[in-house]
Image (cartoon, rainbow, N blue to C red; front, side, top):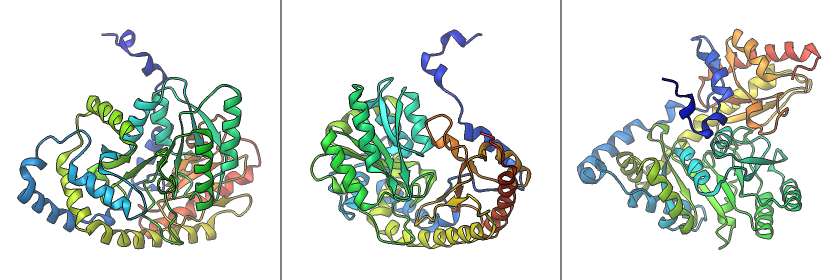
Length: 409
């Protein structure tokens, strides 16, 4: 049967992730991969999860093994709200929706807010998964400059003024606020306050995606933008258990004003009816019992060491000519920028031939012809000895490409 005439118009704009296709090259058994964004299995609290499973089956089996409400198990929504209140966020459980990963939170926001052709403000670069989700709904992008302190408020304001002149009101500003994927940078407190001021002045909604905020190795914690938004209700906040518990549970949450939450819940009903109840009860047990809070320092200790191993190897083996990289204070990633003539997408083929892989940076930029000379490197997953060997190999490949001195983008 020819399915071609049956496909929806939307499928004609869909395309496979360039990164996913390229990373099929990394499946060779000897490749040291810095390409994934995987939490390290050594951080998984297996014993604690096993004990929680026994408690849940003992005390809540009838509910935990049943369907749950679409918005999520009440005990988990209450625990998440309390968890966030400790960080200065004023959150009511009715504002919390438990989602199948943060990616579903992005999808629900798209379903509720994005019409085909709507404009979203994003940083350059920004999280690829968000772009893929918003692309599905036909979004356009107004990109804003960023640096070592995250997205630049003046660039955001300039974009807003420019869009207003053209009769365009963007639906929201999307940011990964802390230890961003892919750049590893954090929006400074001063910039967060300025962004809130700009949002008030321009009646702008902000989507604050914060999967990595708890994984701080150095420096002082920066308050969330949600906590800085005093009573205006214009910041939607996304968080996840994937980085502080286990990714396999596929549990995350959104926090939004009750009206928006209700619309997201109605949208979720048509997608999956409800999130896995059993894992919700397990997460609620671990969160209310303080086990997750006690476990986070162990994750930080492991990742801090891995970050230091990678940065030390980069300092030793990466070419210094025209090459820079972020020194992340937390999270899972660092971000490197090479001289303008180096195309890291093409360079990946040579890197894999030397048994090392990374994510080319181009796909994190929604604009064409930008970011070809960048790459994302993950330090959380590879063993420490493999990090050292892999960075040495990658440094050699980079040196060869830098020496070519010709534009290859």
